[in-house]
Amino acid sequence: MSDLSSTRGTANWLSVQLDEGSMETRMYELPDGESLGAEIMVFADECLCRRHAWRCMLATVVVEIGRRLIGWAASSREKTMAKKSPEQKAAEQQRYVAACGAANAAELEPFLTDPNQSIRAVAAMNPDADAGILDRFADDKFWGVRIEVVGNANVGLDTLLRLLEPDVRKRGVVHHAAREKLEARGVVFGADGMPSVPRNG
Image (tube, rainbow, N blue to C red):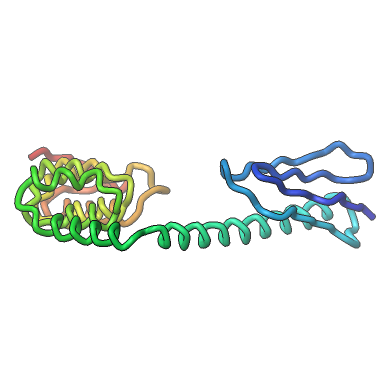
């Protein structure tokens, strides 16, 4: 029967080592600056062989890491929300209204770098946004903003084409929405899910 030594987690690493005189160790990286909090103690009892014991321990460690990181994320989100003062909330509401009411690209430009994702998305929805400013909003790292670019009637063909994802494994709602709009504009797609005859204009 194989016995396992305790497994201890600290701020940025988790070390797993088997007993029986073995020096075999596994290291697991944790997010920079984050901590699992209390030490994780894992023991595997009554395992028939060393390989089985390793699987038991690894499964337990992975579940524990997931549980603690999910809890940390939820806690961090609550803390972030709690930090907003009434003044900050009022300022966000004002920017939201301004993004909705912007009448041209110049008035929409400040919202390209707004820290609030929902405000950037509203700016991308604005019916007065032209193809040029929409192409810049298409560079947003959040898909929630890019999908609003696709949905805007003024979005240019070139912008839609570059929002397509060549890698099948990475395709999401933005790719599929862009494809649907491109097909409505007459662009033909091949079996690989990409335009077979890209058009300009």
